[in-house]
Image (cartoon, rainbow, N blue to C red; front, side):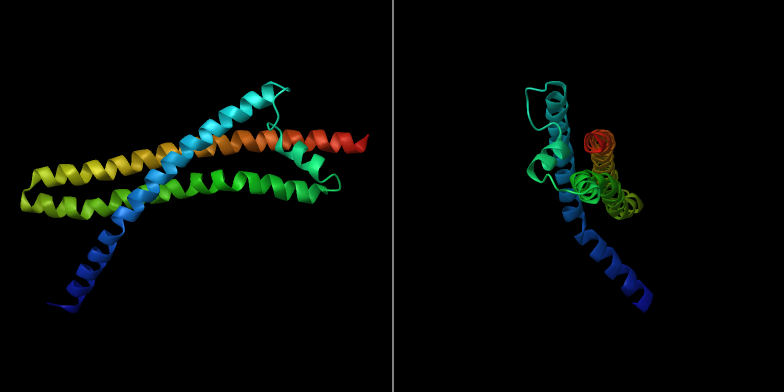
Length: 163
């Protein structure tokens, strides 16, 4: 066995070790995206009904810390958006990895003539990327709308402080 084929086999085996962790992370990100979507819906309802509290996190932060500077408010807004922003960027990467890992066994099964194994591997591959892209789309959309909401709150706070 040549040294290059030993390295290729080693790389293949190491890559296969990551399939279950990557699929698990894609599943977690998908569940997280659904949670974020639910929390977003609740926040939207809170923003529409002034009797409900919690729809305006920066205004609430200023009530708790009245001396907070604009930089501190901006930092707090970035902290609020960070989980969704990270999820929207990480999910597609994991989806790609979750797609590529099963392709090796699928191609090997194709060369062996085992079409059932090819089908199984491709099902896993495409399911991973679909769930990852749905999770990324949800978290990206929520992060962008929340960014606008937070910007509106910052403008409102700046106007209040200017008076």
